[in-house]
Image: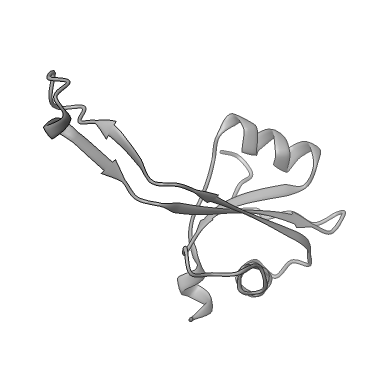
Length: 102
């Protein structure tokens, strides 16, 4: 798997903003086939930082109502696919400037 295919997008929420400020941790949505070693190599090469720890979370598929439909019938349900998130802890004093100012 190519290094640039591992990281899909950053996850920016209130919780992840707090984690980046207080604990120097950054969250990314990653390819479901990627493992911890591939995530670590991708973050280190793309952002030129030193990664101390990687935690991976597998979010299972869910069924949700379609926002365009007012009906609650089962046929109007939409399946959200399985996703994988990675929480990356950086060495002290380092940061990813992509997240700053968001």
